[in-house]
Length: 349
Image (cartoon, rainbow, N blue to C red):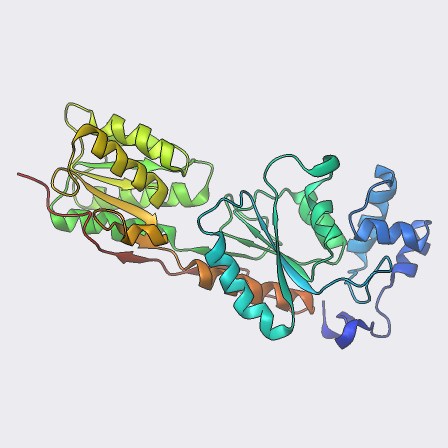
């Protein structure tokens, strides 16, 4: 969309820009019905909603003046799938650093679990009437994206769990490079029997980290032993369970590369329960560099993801989209970095 069709400063609409009244006339409904669709409200027949949303997309509707009477607080909404996430504060901090300079607020929504009143995911976001949406670890379906697009709300995905749909810009990290760096660190220390605990294989990041480890080991002439690979969730409990499995093998690994820091902390606990010393008996590497990794005993070697910078980048992208500017490139990957601490050492003789 060119600048002539973007909302003018102050929420006014430029000449020729489509209005709610225009969409209502084309759809054969009242302007309040169009406003209900735009704001994710219930009480509209599915066929009517689909017709209005199709027209909104077709005519490139963008939000200008507020709809439905009450003024909305300009904000960028950050939608999480589970706010217990240990990464949420860093991401929100990065978003806030960008949007506060534009006079906007930051809102957040937890989309995990059943929605109040059975409301659809996109309806919950539309009801908050944001300037834009940043979806973290998003599993958004095409239909949900189309709903937001029809409502004139741009979206950027941060750290997508799957391959982002083509129209949706996204921000991620160099998971492959991080996995390579972690594995080469273990190889340089002399490890050849490396165990791996991955995240869910439907996650892009989990697949990238596993394949990076496999590739680095193959290149070093020490192929990854399938018996030393475990698949789990990105959480502490699976780290304990799967760590115990690996450490209880007749020939356990001399090092374990984990899908994230929570899994690695679980391996710490598994080692404690089994009387295995870190790093004397087994080296452990995490992924993310959450704050507690520098406080645990011993401090953890891990791969740092720049979550605050990822949040800031996503915020800049969604604000560009909000004023009708294209985002290039549509997929941004920020660099990871290996942080070496005391949980890794040469293997015991």
